[in-house]
Length: 162
Image (cartoon, rainbow, N blue to C red; front, side, top):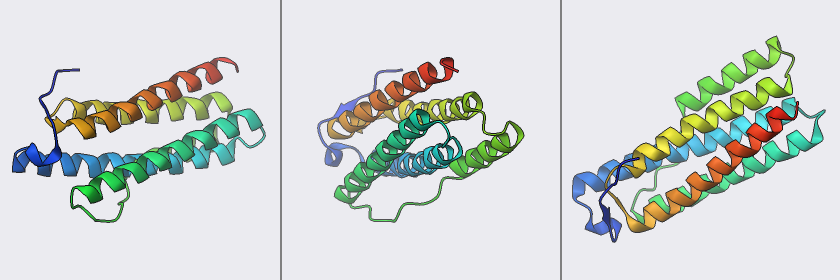
């Protein structure tokens, strides 16, 4: 990850940087809510494995909280548009559905798809963190990145238990 210039506050960013940051945060929010939907869908598919279903439901709750936090942050920046769907998230959920049908919702394949989704989301977060942002935004995003990395590690451990 490259070092980015961090402004003390959102208002101290140049106008173009503020617009870019808002657009990036809108995308991250969409991905968080898509992640929530994805984890809930997979949790329902692996219901016969209660520990796995519970873990995935926990990650769904966490992604929903991330999305809500980003919504609050965007509102503080003057952006009040409602959350939008994520095309990438929708496509990934369709891939999960197809794989679930073909592989009878095998836990290892469902976990692998969750890991794939988290990896993609991490790339988006890291791209935003490499741009000029404000310190308050950076702190929030770094906390969320840390939780996503922890989730990926948990998914990896769970996948290897099968």
